Structures are given as C-alpha cells and as structure tokens.
Image 1 (cartoon, one colour):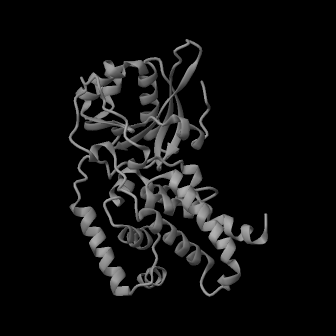
Image 2 (image 1 turned 120 degrees about the vertical axis):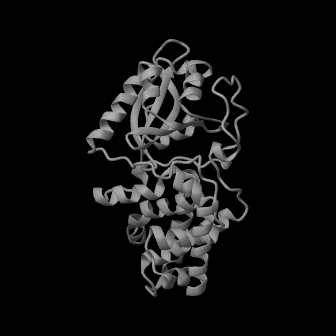
Image 3 (image 1 turned 90 degrees about the horizontal axis):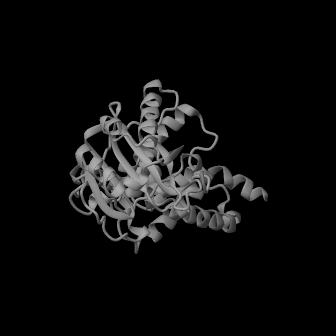
Length: 322
C-alpha cells in the first residue's frame, strides 16, 4: 500500500457511513467511496494541507454523492408506496427494481475498530427509518442535515464544504428539519432501539424471537409483536400491519418459512438475521431473506425481510448454506 493510500484508508468506514446515509444503498455507497478515494489519490499532490484531510475527503465524497443523486429517484420502503395490504393475500405483487429501495448496511463496514460507546451512538443515525426519512430531502439539504446534526460540523465548515454562506446552510438546515417533521412517516419506526449486545432484556427478546421463528410457533411469535407492528419484504411492494395480518400471511402464503434457521448479524444498527429456508432438495437450508428487526419498548415493532440474498448475504459475510 502506498503512503497516500495509507493516509486515506482509515477514513473509508466513516465515509462509507456518510455516503450510505446520502444514497440509501450500501452498494452505491461503496462505489461512491471508491470514486472518492481514486479522486483523492489522483489529486493528493494538489491537496497541500490547505484544509484538514478529513474535510477534504468529505468535500470530494459530497460532490460524488450529489452527482450520483442528480438523476436518481428517491429510495423508499414498501410502506411509502401505498396502504398496508391483507395478510390473506396470495400475490405480493411484482418485484420492483433494486434502485428504488432503501437497502440494508452491515455495521461492520461502518464502525471498524471504533469505541463501543461510539458505535452505540452511531447506530442511531443509520437506522432504516432514519435513512428512509432522509430520502425525503433534496440532496443538498440531506448533506447539510448529515454534516450539521450527525457529524456535528459547524455551519461555517459546512458552508466552506458546499461553497455557500453560513446563512444558506442555516436556511437549508431549517428547511430539512421542517420537511422531515412534515413528512408522513407514521408507518416507520423512528424510535427503534439500536442493537446493544450487552443488554440482557434485548438478548432475551431476540432469543425468544429466534426460538419462536425456528419452531414456527406463530402464537409465540405474535406475542412478541407490537399492536401496530409492520412486515415488509423488499423488493416486493406488499407490506402488512398488525399481528393478525402478519400471522395470516405467515400461516398462509408465507408458510414456506416453516423449518427455517436463523443466523445472527447486525444491520443498520439493528438486530438482524440471515434466514435460511429448507432446501427444495431436502438437503440442508438455503438463503431466503435478511431479516432486520426494529425493536421498541421490549417488543418487535417492524420486520423487514430483504429478499435479495444473492447480493446481501456475501455483503454480510453470511454463509451460502446451512
């Protein structure tokens, strides 16, 4: 590794987190960071230390993200597309293209080697609901909100990065806050508890969830759900609300999940599992979904089953079979 690369690489995890929040996709975030690193490497002889290396890299990354967002549509969750469906549905709808969905991100790609207390705090800002809320903002407002309120940059620093005035930054921040406050985000779980492996109550809840799911004990599983819990399955547009519809789906169209095995992981600062359904051949279990749980008040408030296992399981270092 060259001396320049040695100086740049330590910034990769935090830049990945920033680009992920901006873009709503881990795959696009990795592309953006790689582009940032290449531009920084090529332009390093012009850097000359006129600003902090970190600030310079964020300026490059922001410009890369703004360019990528120029022609992109807003990424969404299934609940952004329409009202909740019926758990008795037999057709969840045609899969929608990957580029419309807010995707998951492995914690390990964002918080490598950081202090555990810092990790807990950082997990708040990558929760699925928060990243989905950011998608309601124009790109520059999104950057201002992240730089000011997540990364705690001063208005002057943000103004210099974006080539605008402090007044412009403050105005953009005010509009960003108002947009998020006014957006209809009632179907999301913005108060979800982040993953805390040392929390005994959270560990116990997750253990009960795994036991109920692997035994396919729908009565026990339903007992863990909030009354307004949601279930969604990107890239399918159907989503469900409430234990009755969720149970109806799992006992009907979704009953192929019976006999599944779960492998724990962490996504978006939230507890998650790789789900493996029994193989059609009868030989072991095959990938089916990345399950991300949003927990609030000691119960499950949201279950998101990301079905693109061909790309997501390698991203999360989940085994190809069980």
